[in-house]
Image (cartoon, rainbow, N blue to C red; front, side):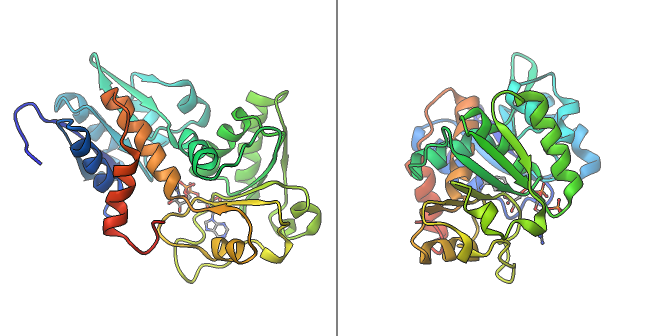
Length: 289
Ligand code: NDP
């Protein structure tokens, strides 16, 4: 990588940030595309977020990705926010252009591209169950409704958070889709599992090897597609789905696609998806397929 006076800076604001895979695949993408950008991880403490966002302007950066715990709070510091990010109330990409900081959310689009592109699953008229009500679940729920699911069920350990998501979705999509809440302790029933086509783990459960299985795999029916947003390992849920011969996918594709959409926002160039995936494959043979 050659840094010159023309090199543009992008990066990721997070706390923590050391685990992020984005610097690896974004720098590989810039190199492969011959784009004079460099991508850095920035450890931004919660109290420093406003100052960090202002520094995008003062340092004339091209933009940044935003991750935990800043995705919601960052909205307050931007000049403009895209319709998706407004709906999801979270931003994962900031672009600095014409003296304006513009916020986007590419997580939902990244999920749908992975599900349809890599997974070959068409969500139109399907019934989906989302486990979780955090940032990932919000982005995925909105994207699934926009992609045409017939029914969206939400469940979360903390019921109140699932209710907030449900109310928010209903406000936007009352007539577009049936949206319902499932009690977290009633998920493992054949009534629920027999009536879904797509199960998404959008919780952080599965990141650690000792994490439990939230769903009893015995109850999954042969037609159910299982998507797990976790990308750092093959989770127990994915292993169980594979053993049952169900169509399934881990979250790495979503990670790459959401990053690819950020790349395209900053550069106006098509992202080299294969190079991005290969960069991860080289470093982390264990889980990239
Ligand atoms: P949040 O912290 O916003 O939400 C975490 C969610 O997990 C909440 O719904 C929480 O439930 C649930 N949860 C945590 N622990 C448990 C448990 N022991 N049992 C049941 N539910 C639990 O995180 P995000 O939504 O931002 O991220 C969730 C996961 O998705 C992370 O692992 C993240 O790395 C991954 N992710 C992957 C992406 C990709 O591109 N593949 C993109 C974005 C995120 P409760 O409300 O009860 O606490």
